[in-house]
Length: 336
Image (cartoon, rainbow, N blue to C red):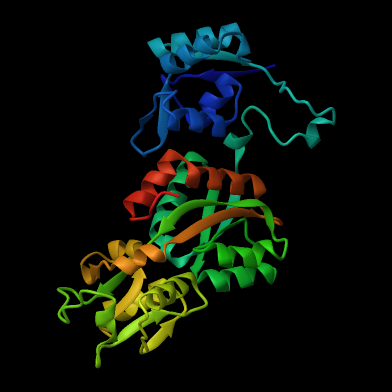
């Protein structure tokens, strides 16, 4: 047993997990599922009122590993008093091995530290950067570093031995480069989908209204390279329409293609809706129906030799959580 004194009326995710005797990830799932009411503090971190935790502990009844005194402490803390908590130092496990062989403790997720390195498709830059900041706030002592780029080049780096914890690809095909080499831990999960859109100069001065319009003579159009997901999807849409298009350049990732239009070095580019949204008034988006036949699934996976495996799992859990999905859908991604 160990003692810990609290002088808070509300609790962060990790502290709530320690009180309830469950993992921080489980608390997040309870919050995401509406089973625990949470608020946001001044820094944006999720906090849970003491009375809410006490009520949850009562509802759990005999299944709760929290001691009676700890539940009573929560009730008192919710009323505004200081608390002296008795928490069990023991954790239940079906594994008869020593404690060092157990990967989970009541508050293991609250003790995350160090750097988690995420390799992610260029189109995820804005949303993943926001999620990285949220992750660091919820896990003080951690830092999320990103490498954004074309999914094919990222996959090649991973199979070539580049150290990373998480890979988020813009297509199952590029994810397969990693899984086929045995460099993934577990099975990749699709967490979002993305659809193409035409990016034009602001105001759409060339009056582009369809995919066919991109084949007009004299129009400078940019595509992603066919080896990257956005280029492969664009080619699929063109093939479906039986259109032939010779771009002025093929770019290595979707951000590079979009930049050509932003800098007025091209009249249009076929990119993702999310990238058009992120560019704001620097470009104008034009929908085209053929894009519905070329929607990309985005899979994510922890890597086999992840230097920070525990933090990798926690970051993936955040991406898949209700909070993570909200950030992604607001950026224009489609639900999986």
